[in-house]
Image (tube, rainbow, N blue to C red; front, side):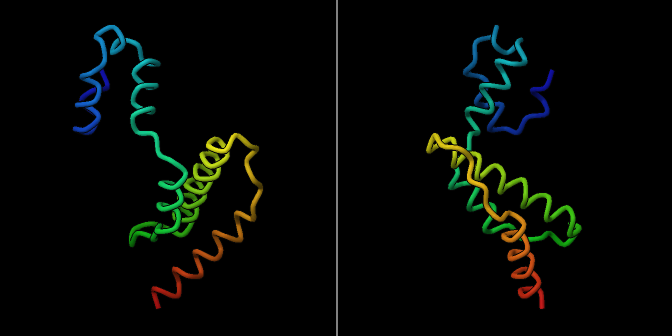
Length: 105
């Protein structure tokens, strides 16, 4: 099963599940995602403080930032029950890359 691949905190969390729910992939997945649910503030913080790793390519860095921003905006719209705002995502990413380059020099 998947349990040996989970980190320690997740393994401890799933001990609270009934044995029948451990056999159902969808119930296990739903439980784990609910317990690890991040708020829009968490995603915003990860996005804002995202730094490029030394072994990370620029494409991977931008992809990671873009995914974090998508999660952030999606959670924000879910929290407020309104449609997801359309922002200048590429402008924000370009600004972060520019700031990153300034820090590196």
